[in-house]
Image 1: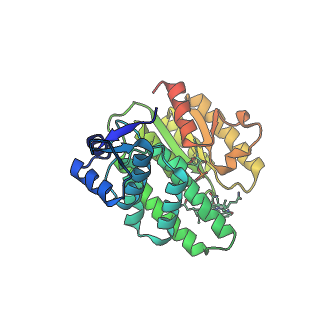
Image 2: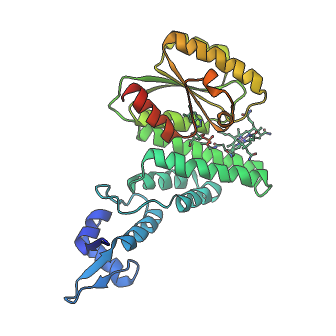
Image 3: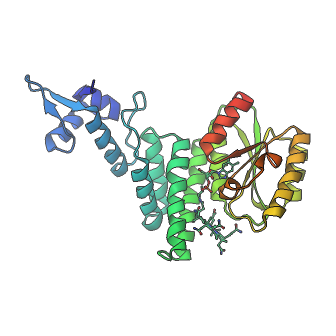
Length: 284
Ligand code: B12
């Protein structure tokens, strides 16, 4: 049966005063109907639709998460972020992303289903000459800055005792995916050793040998020479196994790498898959 809420319940769900809900209803912004006794009643679908709009325009206002009344409209969220990346300020981008977390989205959903697709669209616009390279660079920089702030803000204080080394190999300059990976791991209690992009493969191996992390995450977006990449991954995989580390690889270039099990313990297409894997593998 369809869920119906009272003004008080809607106020609790959205996190505002009951009088505010009544005001919204009376102005027509939030749809309601009246009982024969004159009480306002709200359908779940109407609250849900209103809540997603509300979260866009009033950063920081919250949909309390005890009852997730709406399924996020990821396409809409992605389009709004995309617009802010092209036209908003650094703070607009950060505030918007942060307000989505306040609205009940997880960091994982925000990164996998909103941020990554928004950058994908920007890449396509650039490839189709709809925006210039300078616009693409500025948008990437805005997102990078916002992600660094979000990673720090949503890094879990209570650590799970596990260590992950996050790196991107030599000649790989796409840093955003790696920042997302590291932020999500920190958000799940991992200690992250972040060595950044363009890391020579001997240096990755040296780090694995000396730090012996539980997990090594490599992100690759663009590969010039696939054979060279596979050779490098084999070496890293061997060193990781010897050090007792699990090797995970992800990113656009890893997607179509064949015989992947020869080069890594795990290939992920998303952060969601990575977290599922780490939960099963490490019981954390
Ligand atoms: C931003 C960007 C750049 C920026 C990067 C800035 C930065 N600080 O990161 C700069 C300007 C440096 C750049 C440079 C180049 N770029 Co570029 N870039 C992009 C763009 C627009 C976005 C990349 C991005 O951040 N995506 C979002 C991320 C978060 O998504 P993702 O990589 O899929 O990651 C997700 C998952 O795969 C997963 N994941 C990723 N890594 C890992 C790792 C692990 C372990 C796990 C578990 C999961 C995981 O998690 C993420 C979240 O869901 C893409 C467009 C696109 N389609 O992606 C082009 C794109 C990748 N670039 C492209 C190109 C061609 C280049 C250049 C060669 C351009 C040039 N001529 O100089 C150079 C190459 C530089 C190099 N050698 O690395 C092409 C690649 C085409 C191809 N397949 O070969 C693309 C696809 C653009 C296009 N449409 O043509 N780029």
